[in-house]
Length: 346
Ligand SMILES: Nc1nc2c(ncn2[C@@H]2O[C@H](COP(=O)(O)OP(=O)(O)OP(=O)(O)O)[C@@H](O)[C@H]2O)c(=O)[nH]1
Image (cartoon, rainbow, N blue to C red; front, top):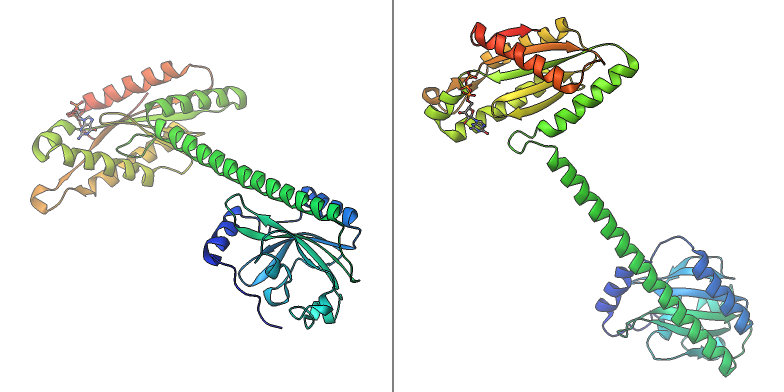
């Protein structure tokens, strides 16, 4: 017994087979129904939907064999896919290609074989729908025709399978794109922080949460001091860089549970859930310290540091978001009036 001859265009054939994504998938009732019908119509104990892979034959469905794959060198189907039409071996022991096959000579003693091609529309034979018996025999012409018709049904199922897989892939892609778009719509493109729209939504949610659960949270608004001269003296790019550094300092200074956003220009907001004024002031102090110890820019000559004025207000679940925002804006204004680097609490 030797390895079956390799089909023409084997490389392309295998590529087509693998593209269907059918190999190593679980058993499915729709395929099992077709093997059952094939066995019943052909009056045999064994029926298999078989795909010829590189080094093995793999069974999507089988009745009467009790295995899902065998090596290629014992495959009768590997011979069946080398020729067009129905491949019938009335007595395998009489055929020199199969007489020494261990599945013929030994268990399970396969003596009869008939296989209908599973062929793609563009002519690639992927495997067979085959029926087998432990006794030598043959098929009636009608049984042969029905076996081939059932093989065509397997191919239809396979196309449907491929179509569904493609559709699922497209839906997943759409979902990813939708997710990305939602993220983009809520993100400030320069700093990667949440933007004004997303922050306002989050603030609304926080007020609603406090109205339900009670307690208080803080809103902190920071405005960079003398930012315009940075743009004027070091250039707009250096200004952009400074805004990005400020954003990452905020991310480092505040808690994971705090929500940081770029409000616009050189203004930033931080929502500190379940936090009182005292704790919010500690956060503000940490930010002032981080700013003072972080030089921005390239070489020493061109280097500068950032400062910020900060306003803090505490709120519960009773006011609306506009009222809280107006209050923090007024508090920030008071801090600005006190001079740079100050924190005011409303
Ligand atoms: N590089 C850069 N600059 C920006 C951006 N958005 C706003 N700005 C600049 O930020 C500056 C804000 O100016 P002001 O509101 O006067 O703030 P300031 O100079 O910090 O003044 P004070 O707040 O009073 O200390 C303006 O020069 C804007 O052009 C941006 O995305 N990138």
